[in-house]
Image (cartoon, rainbow, N blue to C red; front, top):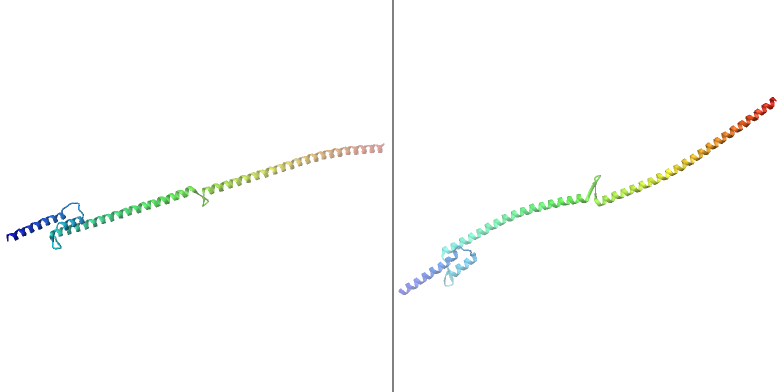
Amino acid sequence: MKFTFVIFMMMVSTGAWAQSQADAALEKDAKTLKERYAVMKEKSETFNEYKVIKEYILDGMWRLTTDSIKKVHAELAEARTEAAQLQLSLNAAMAAVKQKEASMADVEYAATHITVLGMDFTKSFFIGLVGFVLLGMILLIGLVTGRLKMIYQSLKEKMDAENLISKEFENYKRKALEKQMKLSRELQNERNKMAEMRSA
């Protein structure tokens, strides 16, 4: 009996020692659940092929597990909230970027285009068009100026010819008048001579 008592005491002390070692799985430290489970499994007492774990240790592991799951769920919810906030920030930033791009496109369009009489032209096309119109106007002015010079020259020649003809006509009239006067005098002289001859 004494021997049985000693064996019983050894078993109780071994069980208590094993259970106190299994309590190490519940200590507050930085171990993961997997590590705690391994410690609990390794340090718990074995009976035949079964592991004997005290109920309070299982309850403690259950509490740690549910706390870990709650913590993970809380972190997940926080991460989702943060992700939603980041998504909102990203959407706002994307909207701002799109607005700036649209504004930049408007500025770029305004920098490269010009509106004249309600029609849009690129500035290079408009400059070419204005240059072409100016060149056409210069050519037209040159043609009109040349034509006016030709008309002026022709008019001057006609006026010179008219002046020459007018002078010649005046000379002719003067000579004809002189001739007529001379003939009138000669006729008068002849009449006078004839009248003298008649009277004589």
